[in-house]
Image (tube, rainbow, N blue to C red):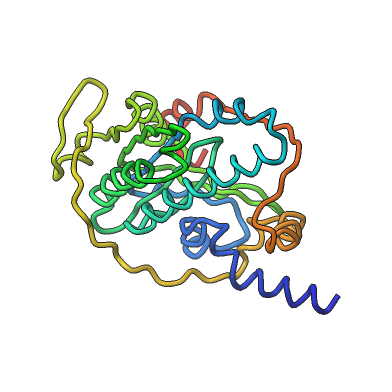
Length: 267
């Protein structure tokens, strides 16, 4: 038990900051840890969605454990490169949803850094060995504005980014062709880009400096990572991955943008 306790403390100190978005730390730091939080945050959101994993899964379905290992290696490698590209430009990984990842940028130059990150994420995927081998491609949407940031829940807490700016980001990504980064005009204003209906396609490939961010405190961030998940993570930390059969559900709640427009984000 003592050894497990040591592992648990080591996990708290080293891994919580990689499991919880930086935005969650900032919101709690400004508003306190014990209540529901709503705050409008200015920034730029990137939605990047890889296509091809579903087809690859179907191709590998009959290969058993070998197929699962191939899929795991491809997912790990691709998202490793995407996250590295996003974090290089100061991005904060908020969510994963299926084959997609949401990354949020705030602070000085957030528009340019987000656009540069989206482009570099495309470059990273094109260079990735697994992506080339399995013909994986990606669409990226980038939108700026005031985002409705919320920390919800009690014992189990979660971070949500809602409102019209979030919806616009997803719409731009949905309208992008494979291999493209599509942004709002304000994001692309300082970059080389070409306009088209539904957004602006970013063509810029410059390198952008990333502002340094202070390390996030651990504090009460355990409320974002349930005890069962934390214990599960520790058990499999040395194995690299785990395979299991599962049923996955996605829940979409409509009418949020309209409710915010009529009643405000606090409602």
